[in-house]
Length: 251
Image (tube, rainbow, N blue to C red; front, side, top):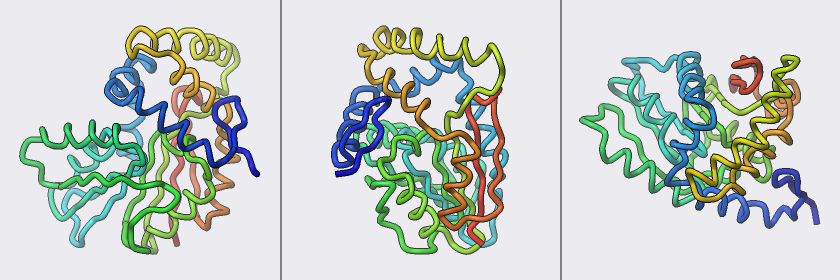
């Protein structure tokens, strides 16, 4: 039986998804509030940077189809939808029903949206989308929670059309001396305490911090993306390496 990382723990592959689900069941209703608190609002800047690099067309001539994976609360989907004034669709795929419920509720409050967003319960490793059906695949702060990352990357490649673009925003590895020590102290001491105060439970946030440390560095993750078949893999570190954007194309 093979193992998977759940934070610093090794658990059977078959158990990881259930453990991850329990984390997001706990934090879903306060997920965006905690992101603001933990990152001092920087996650919004990073997400805006990813959308700016993607540069979705405002008036695409052909239907512009986006799938946002592990994006249950809709943060990325709504940003993309706002940039496309017509002829676009955004499908949010997330395995966690609690996160999807938050996103669907937010979606219902959008004022006269020109680009529709739909929310679908789906595992990143086996998505219910036709092969070659998407122009863009995005995933923000979700790939490190996937049990079998190689299968999720293979699915990303499958659902994209030729010329389609893969974009991933994820926490990364701080590459500045001194800052890395400060970041570690903040992550392991302050963030779980914030979780207890704001969300009522610090353990899910301890897992999230640990999962960042076990995620591969930008070069190793870029190599994984290439092994999945993608070309023109590029990386942009953000805020001293706290996060990074990976961009690639299916050619």
